[in-house]
Length: 178
View 1 (tube, rainbow, N blue to C red):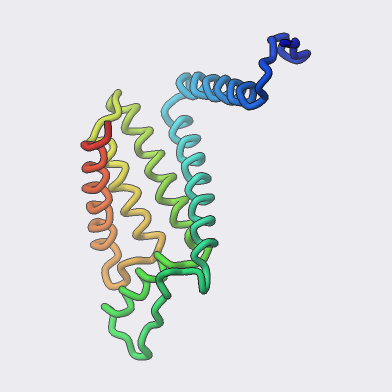
View 2: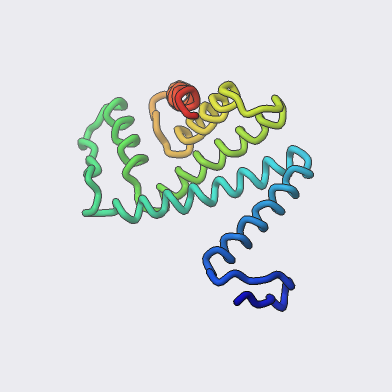
């Protein structure tokens, strides 16, 4: 027996999960329609913020699951009189095995930058293509390198190297994805 919803006047199905799923899809469709009508800078800002929030949540969760004692990779301690190369390796280990807040920050920067750059490239080029995807990956990799403190002896070279590695991987994923 279907009843009418007082707020919408629509007939309700018997399955509350289907009803909730339909409402979420309608909300998402409305949001996408609104975003398509916005100028590039508004869409880029919103997309970047949403990507950053998603990345922060994922990074915080991963940092919590691998924090102290639960980490499969123990964080190495630097030698007392470490040379710059050893300190660079130590900084990289800290960046990858930091606590929940460090992980949340790193993932927020990485995913937010990727989403924002990808959005702008899609708007400029008019399509989602491998060049835009690789540009977004390069930017997010370079920013991740800078924010996480990797590459102490030469942060610019490390940012470029990390960005290039992210771009190569993303290009490969783009080519093999359906």
